[in-house]
Image (cartoon, rainbow, N blue to C red; front, side, top):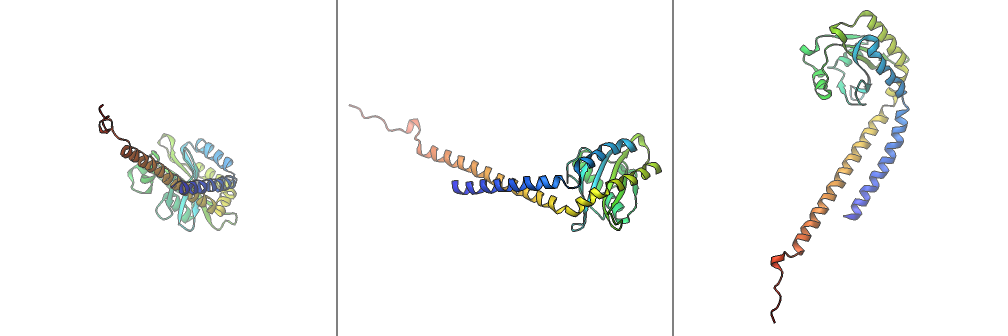
Length: 226
């Protein structure tokens, strides 16, 4: 048991070293701090509640969240064919959707998982440098004051999508690093869980052995009378 646990602990240490190296490399991809800066300021520019940047994964045909207001990387993943972001990416043109609280769709599942209520949204496709492929989506949610996204909002968002496109393209090209990182972290969690279970089982076994080998006070042999 001890030898097995030592091997698991060693494997966790090696995986953590790989995780750190890959994480440092991935964090340099796409200029995360700059994109987060855009996420912070865009809602104020168009008077919206939230902003998100999605990256397209061609293999899974999904869009996953790179960064967004009050959200973590990959906290949201939606299918291209049935999501609002996917519609904008597929048609290569901006997409405005209103009255979402009255409509059924993927946004309901996302809202339930994030604790946010989507009412309206503006999604702008992000293109690669050759302008021949949509590789991501810049999206804002909920125009404040029950308003509608204006032509000025759309024009500004299209300009901003062009400004961030080269950074998103870098992420798009190297996103497999993020996927590997997720797999490593899941593997570490699994190993740590098995190690914790082994530790609990060892304590239970030790307690059981102790209870069997240690006689109770009333079971001890009486002393011999003289």
